[in-house]
Length: 220
Image (tube, rainbow, N blue to C red):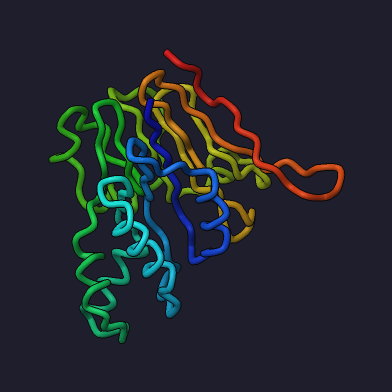
């Protein structure tokens, strides 16, 4: 048995990211896929990038890091000299990040793909789609799409909804509006059964909190 975990839109909240990492089991068979927007627009605090880069180097082949629109804009700022950041190791690492990660049944991407291109989505999707597609898409696609970029509160039209959103067909959205919700949703996928689950933070009688796993999409 192996699991794939996914998180997105950390927005520099390193302590919250570390808290959500406690739910991730990175044994040799499992993977963690991060879907972009680790920083904020025109950020001067890039410590989260160092942390994620080191995490990926520690768990080679297990931690997959995808480019988000904020990282894309950072690279543009560096190229135009609008940003003075000059750590070449981190810059080269960012330049090498993919726009998406694909499995036999899934596409992990920051914003989305051009679904009208169907099975030719890799060639039919401009870079804009991968990083900045808006608005979100729902409905049936031939692979599951796991994305961030648009908050689940916006998608559901419910201001206090910050959990993973599944459209009951092929789309999972995992941007929990971290700065507002103070939590980073974790999507968990069982590669054997095909079950998707996530976690809720439950307040105890003593005012402490525990994480409780719940099923989003049952096994096949």
